[in-house]
Image 1 (spheres, rainbow, N blue to C red):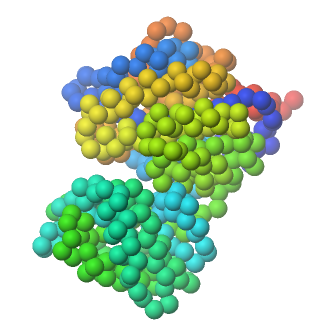
Image 2 (image 1 turned 90 degrees about the vertical axis):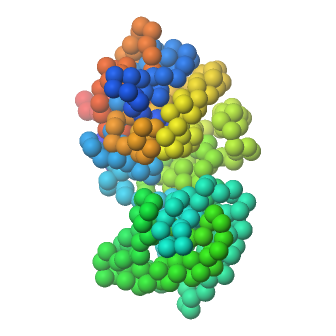
Image 3 (image 1 turned 30 degrees about the horizontal axis):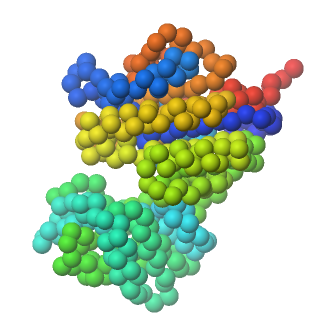
Length: 402
């Protein structure tokens, strides 16, 4: 839907919407005809909510397209992820509260492990502790190139934010991460002539970083991807008339929420219970809450089917705390699918639940999962259409025409 058209129909209302995103929620069975991770999980509270909800399958970007977390989140937030194409680097920088300026070029970084021949053996360096990552980030800050500033900000575990500051930088760059082991990290190449300067500077930094990290274990090299400048995106308050808050622990998800104008709330700990506690303590301050669950995706990408099941069950156990707040609309979905059998993001549509008093619900007892959602009243639809439907159910969209 055109956002300018939707904006003209927005009306105020005293209603509250909660968007619960289980990252990488969609899955696949381990055996043909078997159950997915969501279908395997024991989820009595989600199942009860599903019976009172409209169900469907959402497509983050387009049929057959595997979405990254950035575009997947923009879509479920109500934006066209193709029109608003945003590099992961900018999102990661925003997620750690780094103030990106007009001369800044950002990328997501991974500490990684290479062997004596320079071949990748672990793209994530064993998910090294965040404390170790901080120490290595300080080391990389010693890289010097005349006329250029480099910033390295640790995120979590092996991840960090890389920012290059210099005039005349262009983000049209290839990435150094080959996305597989057994090969060497790639050199950065300019996709268009305007990016030649940026490519040269990034390659210079990577070479120096490799020399500084040589001999360390397990992190003895870096990978960079998602090069991006600061993007301009219409804001939630302006577009939808919502006072929106985000509850997320990991940097990139805090970044994408901040990008669209949500207030990112601090979470004291790093558990799901801590996130739900923030929801409860700030309930009366906002109209819209985005609550992010990361570990469903982490388990999917690690091939941990049982682990992903356990995370879904943990969310289910906490769901009564959300429902006790009596939200007017609840959306439970994911930004993309991450089947454990594939150990990666995938193109499969995402199971989605939309609860309100005004939906055409299933009515009967139903198991919240891919099969039930495939039969639901929402059908198979672009993820960007979920937010307008939620706004309508929250009484926030006026009638169009006479």
